[in-house]
Length: 381
Image (cartoon, rainbow, N blue to C red; front, top):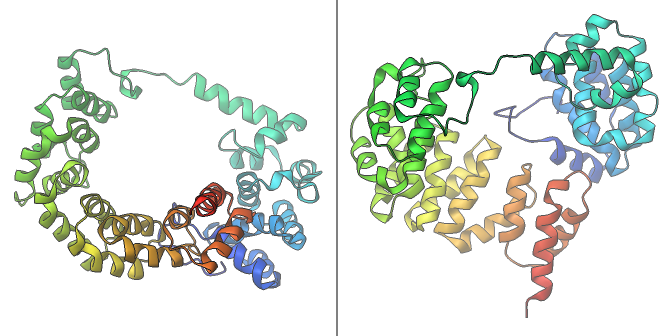
């Protein structure tokens, strides 16, 4: 966690995985503490993961982690990030970390520093507000600013009462209402969506038209003929729209296109782009995709994508998926662990690991999946 290896910091997980390793191996925390207090940059990225891991370690019996985290929350350069980690991990329930923390934090921060840190009325600030008048005023100001913000049709996602002509006008006018109007037209089954999808003038700077994929999803199988034409159009945006439709509702005749999309994404290491065709090939049970899915599982640096690759493999090659799922029980992503709990081949080691996951305080998202599989195994003849 001193070196953050996540490919996408917004979604890839490492906190519970690293906390579990530290707990099982009884590793010292002095290097983490030194890393936190040595970092003096304005960016909190280099310390974010370390703070998240420290916030989980007390649940594994590491009281020394709570001591370090509390000290950093009061004295550290990125003290507000430490408070976010505390609020998001449930560490607020730990008396040794929580008692008196609000008093200590507010005592060493002026109003401007607190106002900059409190960007939303989330924990721990909502609880701090009960005992700290200064925090309460800032939280109330945030709530008031949101309640007084004008809400017009361009900000509404519910356009169900609008006439179709008005929806078309909103699409052509642009602005934030465009995506919602497109989705509503799709929900109504209006084929004008095909014209809008093909209109380059509606695309943003990235060449995309937000709202079109959702609208096409509403159209369902009605969009299949157009989608099959788009994938050979040479227009990258239409190809992507078409492949999305085929992935959602295509049939076995579309397998070659989806397999080509998977291979193309793999070759260019576009891990996110590989997720949709991976799931689709699994849905269709395309055995020919198994080798690519195994290679993607082994190669991707985007850990969240592994859940899609495992799901695809479960549909394409269940026996291979059951083998790989055993490895997935130790994955850093809770979604992968959940899928692995359901699909790992039954062995003595797997049952032992399921028991560990069912009781692991650092991975609460996985508890139910582990308990469910254990019950299934206990009921098996």
